[in-house]
Length: 160
Image (cartoon, rainbow, N blue to C red):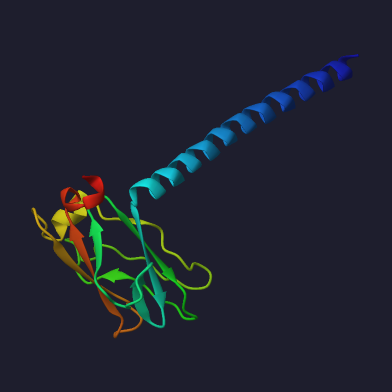
């Protein structure tokens, strides 16, 4: 009788834990969907493809054109080449490290984590109230270079 009581309590415990796990998991999924919808609405992610050893903004047919980014937006680089690349700021911070660096993008990790161009980065790049030119390179291939034009959020026509 003692064994059946323990078995019964164990079953209830498993049921409680499973219910809690499902409830927490479904909330996390809802948050992900809300974040995804927010990104689609405010265009807060700018996608730059790397193809044929060139950087090209998603939807643009001219490689290495400067890409306009507004303070508060994030950039994701996606490598579509068969070789590894990076997208690394040409300017270093006070610590001697690049202000941003995607790290190695290759078949195992084809897309960078989003890099947020926030107010702090804008100021580190010399921004005060106008646009700032942000050169970046591929640290593996010397001839791969491009440019982001970082503008204050107040200049974003989609936010007006």
